[in-house]
Length: 277
Ligand code: ADP
Ligand code: MN
Image (tube, rainbow, N blue to C red):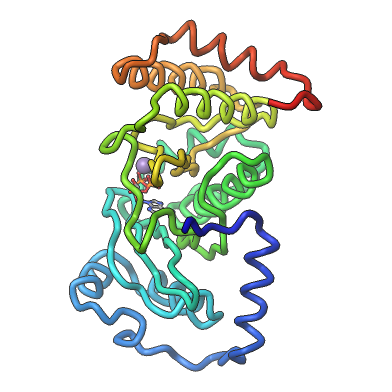
C-alpha cells in the first residue's frame, strides 16, 4: 500500500503525538553510536561533516523527529541524502556541506529572490539560507498540490523531509526508470508546471535527474534553487527547464518539442479553476 501524508497538519499531528509520548530530553547528549549504528555510514558522516553539522543532526534527533541515520541514499558534491528511521517509517535528510558548496551558483538564485533579501554573503549564511529556501519551496509545492517530498523540519544545513520510496527503497530517478506511460507523465509534469507558474514559481533545475518515479507516481525533488517569477533570470531558467524536459520526453516517445511543450503548459495555466479535469 502506498503511504504518504497528504498534508503538513497530518505530519504535525503525528509529530506532536510522538513528542507527548516521549518527553523531550533537553540537553541530554545522544551518543554517536546510537544515532548512526552502521559503521560505513558513520565514517562517511564524520569525513564529510563538521562538528556543528553533527550537533545540528543531534539537535533534530533530540526533538524526536527521527531515531537513527541508517544509510546514505546519495552523495553529491554539495550535500548528501540519508535515510533516517522514524517511529512509523522513514524520512530523508539532506545535509548540505558548508565547505564544498558552490556559493557563486547559490548566490545567483538567492540574490534575485525577495524572500531572501537580507542574507549575508559568507559561506555558512548562504548554505543556511539555501537550506531554508529548499524547505520553504517544498512547503509552497505542497500547498499548490504539486507532488514533492513533504517538508518536516530544517535547521542550519540539514533538511528533513518525507522519504520517497516503497518498502524502504528510495524511488529511482526518472532518468534511470522512465515512466511506463510517458504520455501520462508528460501531462502530469505540464500540469505541475502550470500550477507552479500560476503560483509564480520556477523550479530552475527540472529534468529527469530531479524527478523521481515512485512506482509510477511522478515526484519533483531538489528545489533549493527554485525561484519566484520576479527573479531577473526567471524566464531564462524556465526556458531551460522546458528545453531539458521536452528533450527527454521526446527521446522517450512523446510527440513534443520545446515549442509544443511551452504552449501546452501555457494552455493549462489558463484553465478556469472551477472546471473539473
Ligand atoms: P543533489 O542533486 O543536489 O545532490 P537531490 O535533492 O537531487 O540533491 O538529491 C539527490 C538524490 O537523493 C536524488 O537523486 C534521489 O535519488 C535522492 N533523494 C533526494 N530526496 C529524496 C527523498 N525525499 N526521498 C528519497 N530519495 C531522495
Ligand atoms: Mn538533484
